Image 1 (tube, rainbow, N blue to C red):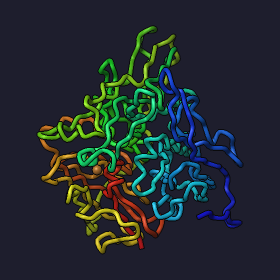
Image 2 (cartoon, rainbow, N blue to C red):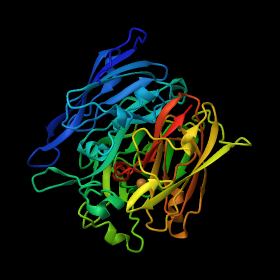
Image 3 (cartoon, helix red, strand yellow):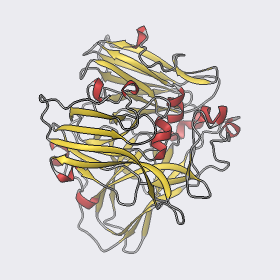
Image 4 (tube, rainbow, N blue to C red):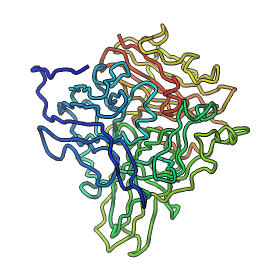
Length: 476
Ligand SMILES: [Cu+2]
């Protein structure tokens, strides 16, 4: 379904975004066949798109709050596709709902105003049943938004503003990507997810930063289909986090490590000013293993590796001669404490398993269906509780809601065996995806005051999502 540009919308930035097949030299030896997004600025500042050389990772969009953007998406891969702007608040026709997929050769016109506050958002395909395959093939990119509040915080910028997308991939002997999702992974693969054997950073085995000095802003996206990472410094110093999914925290927080589920983002302040020249400091992504009783076997369906991926030093900083000290601001953003108004409507969404399929409140995805308990009123503030208490199989689920950003207000019922992970959550900021551990109930506060229409909420383990662990809700 091609949509025509309208006269009513005058874009500040006009971009063409093509999803296409390509070949890239990712490993020594044969090039790897991938899919990638290639973008071109037709109107507006040339730096609205930034390419990552030698990577399949999509161009990085760099826009400002309040800018009007037109994106003409052209689908040149051999599957139907559509683009979703993860975390951005856009009208329903612009959100990349699976019913809006376009066939090979088709196009979709997006026109929207950037309403979100500054933050690290991203974009990826959202066709029903094929999201995992397409993201895994290489279709994903970052969408960075800036605003005045962020500028006032005076964070490191230019080449001190580094973006890293983590993702795991399995390659065959000919360097080609192997993916077995809901259908190919066998019954057990579909239950747990897909776990690649190697952890890549921006599509590369690792990234090096020679001559590092002073302070950096490091943006991280977990772009993996299913894997959850524990991220830490090689020297075991604390991490300083300054932002989560939806932008800056009120103030910096320190964490011994960070837990990042699929689709979650975190921004770190890395300061090397008192490190000695020549020393090497790495950021390490350690795959988290949720192998409870019986789960080890479950994780070894055809789609899962025989060995879990090894911890990966994905960013290696070699300290150079000093840059001046840059002070970490003690206030970052004006972010009120999340308080729940009295009489707030509450809904529970149980993460369920039935007939060997994941669901939400016992239902799986239907293209247009909205159940009575999935209708919300425009303007309302609600508390949604994701309850992960299925007795059948204990799995974490990264839950994502479209059309609204939310605040995490409570995380209840963390089992003692997983309580150690709580030190690594960044629950205090503005979020659009929250990891719900086995046994937990996580309550989020959100307001539906942006757009009316049909939107999605789902698990962002893409194998679960493709199997139908996704539903519509309607804002009316
Ligand atoms: Cu899930």
